[in-house]
Length: 346
Image 1: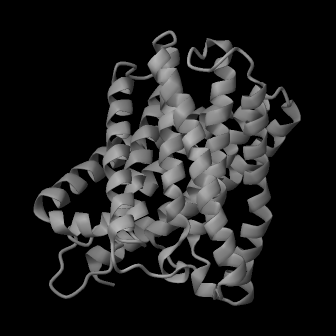
Image 2: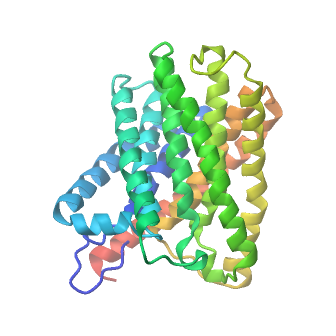
Image 3: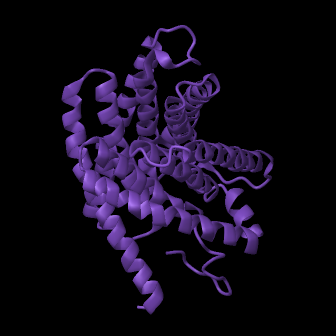
């Protein structure tokens, strides 16, 4: 729950990363459906059917009541990228509806909303970062949430593929999907270079090893997921130059390999912080930054195994989906306990 300053209401302090819960719930729901856990998938769809509209209403009220607070969040180095969780959550909701074959007429509207929000939030944030005169160093200004630029972009690509397939192939939608997929990959290359530099050459403490660094993996996982969906769309991709999908297949394989590469390192750092050093786990909205990558890696690996005709990789997804389920349950318990403490004051 947000920490309130003196004279600050809960609405004013409402975190821009709140939609990460919707993102995580949505992708775990999709992963559950892909792997045959239908009851869990439908249950999580029901959770998001309540959570996304509720958070959207809260965000609109905050925008109308405290527009300066919303603007201050978007133009902040640390908090700004978190505003893009709204974009990704909107696209993930569309992905859930597509996966469960519900409300097909709503999908183009959700795609339009997600793309519109991406334009407004991304360019407002990047423009502010460019012309701002007070800029922190990498240690203070760069964190894992910057990779939400990648996640939000790739989420638009995933939903665009789904809408195009429902519409029976569309040149503009296919071009949007391919362009967003490639743009997200380019943004990842830029940002991960800075992140590697910070990790390896700027001193870090256990306190710096926060949950959003798991988006290092999650950003590549959703890029793999989008690439796999594009491959499965095959030669129906009217926006893909020529008809050869070899480049698409090679790049998607590279994305899956990079996502897999991050997992042992992130697990080792998690153990270092919470087991060896003994820093206790406390619930914050950032905990969903672990759940989302785990769910997305599961969905991405399952889809990549199908697209690349590598059925043995499906066994990896069968393991990681259980881990994603457990992480979602733990994060939900933490959310409910934090909400209870906020109400009771205990």
